[in-house]
Length: 427
Image 1: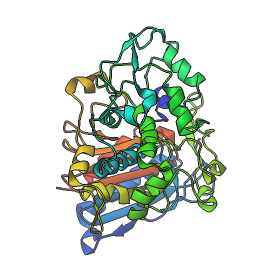
Image 2: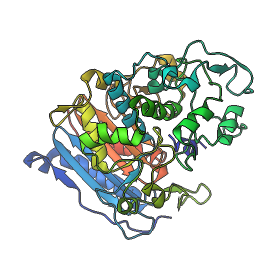
Image 3: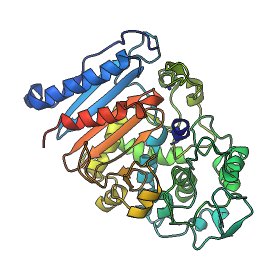
Image 4: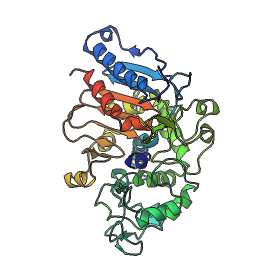
């Protein structure tokens, strides 16, 4: 149940096609712990493909100028077309950090302020009402104690988000109503048919679940941010991102739509059938859907991208907002994006899923205690279709894995990838 909800926010076919890793850096990368660690990582991921736990994977580990890229498996289950370094993937929730960074650009422009109510640009959200009980009737509400702010959207404390309710419990009325309104609040697919203005109008008919600022709740903040950015920028979200972020960074293979030839290379989407234990093709977005702009460009889960494009975005943050000598974000904006803003109580109230004890910056998680991957301060996030990214700024380490297997996040493969990527780096 939780796996399906996260998609916001997959018997394998024998031996998978394997390709040799590509390493850039210099003579130092030829041996030592780095090489041995990368060999262990490849062996572990190849074994998961061999066992039918993954269909394919494209991944990267970068550390202080050394960059290792590897590809394993195929685009489709039982297919012959191998994974490539430039294979495009549905990012799902890896969209969230990108939207958060774009928001900070508009804050730096003076078009938005972190502490301002969103009512100025989203008057639909003025005068919010809040449910007296999150599982209660929609007409049992009290006035919101204060307006929703821009920072509330970035930190997912706006008072609305996904509810990870037990599977035996009937859907809460607020969830049922959102489904009736076709708001697509959780899974990226099927997409909402509504354009941004109509989407926010419909969303505004719902009360909040909690008071603004009270509680961390997943996903909705990024959906609303997408609408807010369009109005603040005075142009469609896709155009704004292309002009201010993707173009300057050279992220030419990232967007809410793809050229027909690139869309045709999107891998299939797979998840395990719990009854058979086998991977099966899922009814996700079809490649042809990616050849035209969506009605609603989702700031929560709407982008597709490639390994190198997302690595470029990650380096912008690691380099404190500078790309090839040009500053695109201030160091202070990067600090705010990558620093935990939640209280200990808000982290605890979020439960074990999906934060898993981490804090939250703007659009991404931040580790707050040491674990087997790093000390505090590691930031990044996952995509519910089987993707992950983290950066440990203290060790200048970045690891990215893109797969088309939903269960990558739930069968231990993601955790193993992160652990082995970190173990390949000493110091």
